[in-house]
Amino acid sequence: MKMYKSLVAASIISAVAAPVAADPTLYGKVNVTVQNSDDGTESKTELKSNASRLGVKGEYELDGGLSVIYKYEFQVDVTDESGEQNIKSRNQYIGLRGAFGEVILGRNDTVLKQSQGKFDIYSDQEADIKKLWSGENRMSDSITYKTPEINNFQFGVSYIIDEDNDDSATSMSLTYGDSGLKKTEYYAAIAMDNEVKGYDVTRLTVGTKISGVVIGAMYQSQEEVETGEDKSGFMLSAKYKVGDYSLNGQFQTIEDDSGFTLGADRKLGKNTTAFAYYTTFNFDMDEDESYLAIGLEQKF
Image (tube, rainbow, N blue to C red; front, side, top):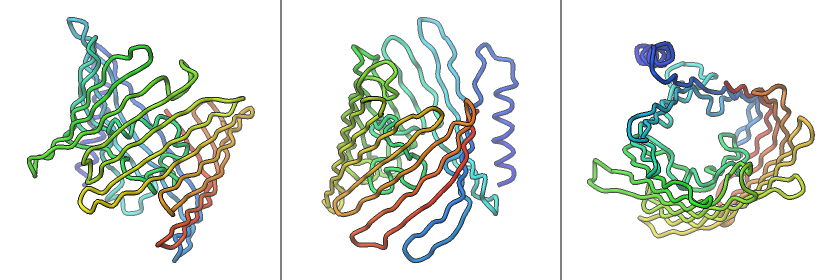
């Protein structure tokens, strides 16, 4: 494991330090919370790393109007006691971009997962929509293609190869606009998974800003392929900025299970944010859960 960590560190440092025609970008973030976690059977205070990460990405121009794009990203658990499981692979790929759009080969989020945009306010926290919904998949052995944007529309497809079973799965999306709502007034997406990690999923996402409030809404239906069990639910999120503060709320359901979160963020600097939130989950067939957290995030 120590050798693996050394190789990872060496590859990142050498990628940044080596003389290349196009400089790569070293990036990452550290997100840590102190939280009281109650899973219905036990309540404890813990320090938790929330998808803290380190990566290298870049784009290199080629002949014929093409460019090669790449990303090499790792998740780092900065609170792991043993140190044995504190590095995990995230999106890692290489691809080509040009007038045809872009094609990416490697490990990558499916286009259905990407279609959520930025409207899952508590992504990577306890209230991440993956807590209740299927479809939040990062797949190895995947080929992702996206068309160029035409009148703010873009089509994408992920093709996932199952080498062990000589089988495949697909994820497709059609999006409109900018999920950050900086270039367009509205964002909308429809996406579908076909047998991705054993589920067929359909997801609809819309978002806009009304009187300074960023509002997001999502609807999802999902069916487990093997059993035929189907479920559906929705998510609503809202974010309102007041100076350096952001007031946030999010509600999500799937059948009789639901989760609700209230929180606030405070910008301490361009890349530094302090935050706090309370999350509660009510389950129909399981113990209820609740989380109270305060945290700090630094991006670079």
